[in-house]
Amino acid sequence: MTLPSKVKIVEVGPRDGLQNEKETIPVEVKIELVDRLTEAGFANIEAASYVSPKWVPQMATSTEVMAGITRKPGVIYSALTPNMKGFEGALASKADEVVIFGAASEAFSQKNINCSIAESIERFRDVAQAAKQHNIRLRGSISCSFGCPYQGEVSPESVADVVRRLKDLGCDEIDIADTIGVGTPRHVQKVMERAAKEFPIAQLSGHFHDTYGQALANIYAAMEVGVSIFHSSVAGLGGCPYAKGATGNVSTEDVLYMMNGLGVDTGINLDKVVDAGQFISKHLGRKAVSRAGNAIAAKRAG
Image (cartoon, rainbow, N blue to C red; front, side):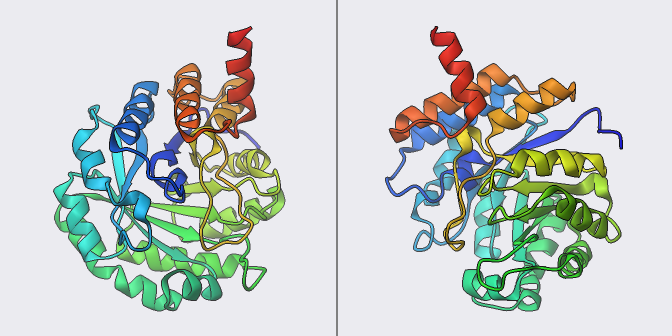
């Protein structure tokens, strides 16, 4: 199996990473984090979420963040949009991409957004059509593609079914997400290969959490079957409020360190990402989760 020579890393720290923080993070800190990540060379950054502040208060300042960041031509700044109200917020903020989300698990769908998988997809139909009308990229994200905290095992067929539904809505890219981090390499390959029968593998992405320490191995396994887009979070920020015990996303610094070692081009400056990780971790008052980031920072400090 040959690995792709180049991969796209979608940085999700400013949105998925920060959304569960209890203490309110100042707008200027969020803006600086996005700007640091832009400067590091990311082609795609999840910067905002237009969900109800009642459910995700940390994202209530998304409009201010989007207005304050320094945008770089060619960089996609994404926003999560659960409904038309959210889409209108993203449109007004000039988001380059809107993200809709479903689950491969019926139990998780009910717990997370209080409806069935089929109902959730229907809810997004208006958002999808509006995105196309305004020439905005549309990305779909599938939670619990490898396991669910409520129903346990999730079959590759269940994932493929949601991939088909999102494809029918016109998604440009579809994320296969391991929300609770239970996936292992062979399992990941089976799911990705099954999903690729419904949607081009070049437009599928892997979003892995590191609950069981498998995220890097899963990324490598996904690369072996042709996946070349991955999500990661600076300093390993994030988790899922509806998935008990799920730890953060895989650390961007760790992913980049592995890619650099493999000779896989990302177009991203690892040292600048380490700086961004140390910056946000210092603000949050805790050490970064990233092993590579912390090791590089410690080496610099002598």
